Image (cartoon, rainbow, N blue to C red; front, side):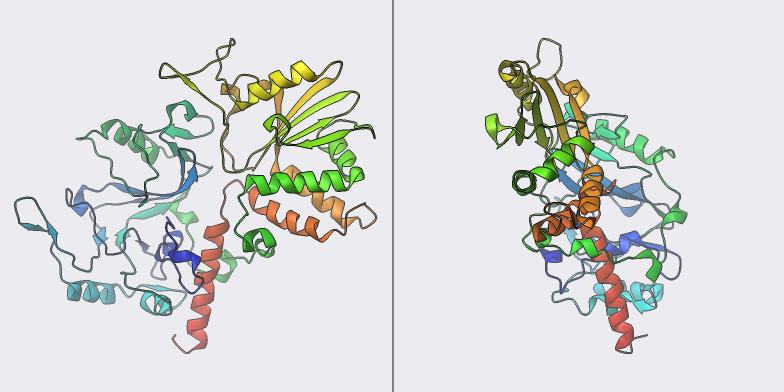
Length: 424
């Protein structure tokens, strides 16, 4: 979902935003492809379900919803002809029939037809609905698919599907039981049919104003410059605030890192490639900051991932800890991993992973918010701090919904605009 640059233009409303709502008539309509086409190797009656996903990165995609299909499901198409190898034509339909079918459905959201909703797009050469589905469901908890077997983790709901790269350019793939995707098909079928994973379709709302809330934190400098997921920028901000305001760092160390820092500390950025390193007379502190990336530094030996003596994977975590052991002297080593609340990283697979304490961004966000609210604190009035706090907020949710929420607001605003112009 939401691939390419189409949605980056705020004059456009990506069509797949409708997948998060019921239409006014209570039916589920979904958007999949620009012209309503599906693989020429199957008919609509062959399709059991559609998983809607977006790319997380590093071999992971997140499942944000599923649509289940049955005999009542309908495929709408503009009539592109699919020619088979023998020259015959399959699924040939006329655009006039598509238009007639859409008019018969009378698909509206918030009292506005879907045609009027999209008529204001700067570019709109696509159909507005691909398919009518039986149901749409959201996962109860974050749910991921991966093409990297070492990342599979049932407790974290990360499922290994196949070595075939999932996050291709179109973010579209088919899995069936009679091809080289059969193994992945069986796993996907288990996921789709596992009722413990999914919320009831009743959780899918009709479009009401109460279902979409404006997020004031989304308007911040990090987002304007497109750096809201940049680990380097966030690490630089941690370094700036901690080095600029020693009192802030000492309180952060005490409240969040459970460490009392002396006044004679040294803070380094990228020392030995560590994101942050803090050293005083008693402590040697490693801080590794993560947003979208996973644990780096894994290597392969003879085709297998390299492991340390304890049988766990070698990575940047064990590398940094070994350096700390060599340099600590009489100091106590403390290692921390800053991660968004939605991050699925499982550090137990990595050597020295048990040496690192995970600090979630929600903890960090709450700390900085409380700190800023006391104007007597050093740096509390720093304008960079307030912008940083807003940027942190998007990483405090269990799912990274920032882009989805923005588009849902665009849909709401488009409906209100149409009503204002008398299109009711």
